[in-house]
Image (cartoon, rainbow, N blue to C red; front, side):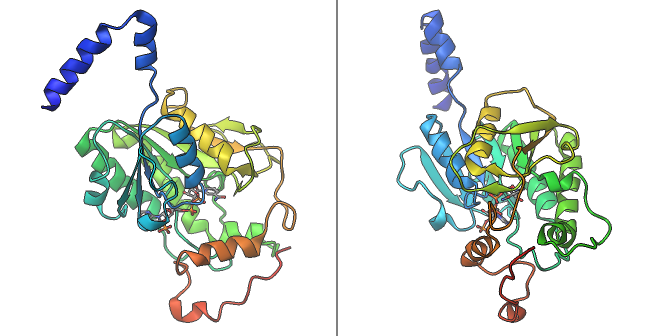
Length: 288
Ligand SMILES: NC(=O)c1ccc[n+]([C@@H]2O[C@H](COP(=O)([O-])OP(=O)(O)OC[C@H]3O[C@@H](n4cnc5c(N)ncnc54)[C@H](OP(=O)(O)O)[C@@H]3O)[C@@H](O)[C@H]2O)c1
């Protein structure tokens, strides 16, 4: 049946005039979005649907995926630690985008992390089984230079890099895995993402350290636009692309620590804070 459908689609396409055939082949590709309740996911979903793509959203908490009810959005419950659940979201044709990341409290040391390596290996295995070819994974500018010495400063931005060094090490290990997975891939390394209208101010560094002094602040909307542009483009295949801007991060100006923490806590317990001690965790101090 699917053979017949494909055959008739081919005949129809080849019967089109040249310009129409070009438009046919340039139709935006459909995506599977893994980690579809991520802070950045609503913008990716919104922009992808506006571009006419079909979106399959895989999430541990499907009720919290945005865009419910749109005809081109399919929501599937799944977990990257369960390969079969990833397979259930794939038809073999989509470009796969992973936004997975752990829910962790930046004030508390992350003692163990394998989400990026294990999750990405499972995504790749599912893709290969179903025939999907291209994977966009999200890492971070923080994975470019994983901190090895405890900072002297108590500024939370420095302490976060230290507390989360195992998280960044797992991201870096995932980055190293990518060439061996047998897939087309792009590694995205965003800076600090905030919820503001699209600024169209992204700067990029490819396979390199971000320039010293680069501002890490970018918007979810710019990140989403960049990701979706890569779905249809091979320009950055096999590359790691750092995304940053001229805007520095500053508590009380473009970063609100308490709001960030509240938003994270609202979706469930922090994964690096034992449940019994979570209640005792001091309220977020004003970071310096
Ligand atoms: N936000 C930033 O400023 C920033 C900066 C640099 C890099 N990044 C990276 O960019 C990516 C997107 O960032 P974000 O802030 O939008 O993400 P986020 O809000 O931290 O969300 C991460 C997503 O991963 C999902 N997830 C976690 N474990 C999973 C599992 N086992 N199976 C399936 N899904 C799982 C979460 O589901 P639940 O909702 O169920 O927990 C959530 O949907 C992440 O990789 C993040 O580390 C973010």
